[in-house]
Amino acid sequence: MIGEKKSLFSGMQATGNLTLGNYLGALRNWVTLNEEYECFYCVVDEHSITIRQDPAVLRKRARALLTLYIAAGLDPEKNCIYYQSHVSAHAELAWILNCFTYMGELNRMTQFKDKAAKHADNINAGLFTYPVLMAADILLFQADVVPVGIDQMQHLEITRDIAQRFNGIYGDVFTIPEAYLGKVGAKIMSLQDPTKKMSKSDENANASIYLMDDPDTVMRKCKRAVTDSEAQILYRDEQPGVKNLLDIYCACTGKTADEAVKEFDGKGYGELKTAVGESVVAVLKPLQDEVARLEKDKAYIDNAIKTNAEKANYAATKTLRKVQKKVGFPERIR
Ligand code: TRP
Image 1 (cartoon, rainbow, N blue to C red):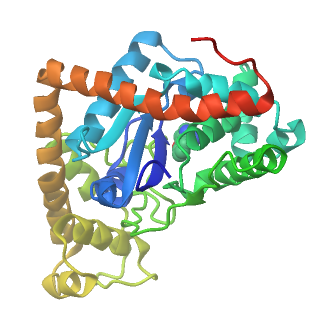
Image 2 (cartoon, protein in one colour):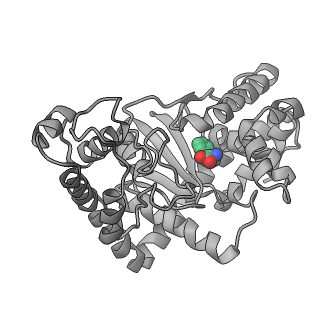
């Protein structure tokens, strides 16, 4: 809880390009959450350096992600959209929580095992304690709910374990966060393998539509989407490629699956793919135009960065001071 409202926290890394799946399944649905929750959306640049980054690229991508949040409709007056590195309480709380987290717990994290295997030349301590920094993110803001994908559930679990352990020793310091299971958006699958989720790290460039893909690229990827040889447009699990195209079409147009199936009755896959491509362009084009407009309005974005970092700092420091006192750090003299 922060003030009157329940609090919501989510973080995203600025590495990798966001996909249509990220937008339709998550970002787009966050726009109205600020009515019910005090919302914090953090660009987690400190997490990003657990993998080696080019500094100029990281800086640019972090700003692009923050701009994208705003372009997607998250009003920076009503949502706190900020960089993790601008709020030093993240790193400070992470240190304290490191001392309440066991090596054995961290050793079980599947994401650590995956990333360590992928980056065998740089298995650094930050990569190992990544979930502790994530716990600090969430707990600093006393988050009641955390919208996360299934791949982050294990990290949310360890966050709850750390919070409960700390509360068990020191009393009710942290809110125990839950996964946000509100209205979930469409689950969009890969265009090349419709049994797999559309992912920003897919090796096959044709598998994912990126939010910044231009209309020609979107159309080309849709036309190359894998379907089947049934030659009928029905919404059913036996035709995962066609089903995914219909899901995308429905998410972009607001139509129901029944309506879409009627509309395409007797038509071929070529027509379906063209219609899907056009519906995606109709959603992405205004978003891209808004990003372009905001990128030119440097003063507006800079102001959002400054004021939101102050808001985030205020809320985070409040929790941090409480924790510092609990563990026995000396009082500050004013
Ligand atoms: N680890 C998350 C991811 O890669 C990003 C993240 C960092 C996060 N801190 C968070 C997500 C706090 C939710 C809450 O997707």
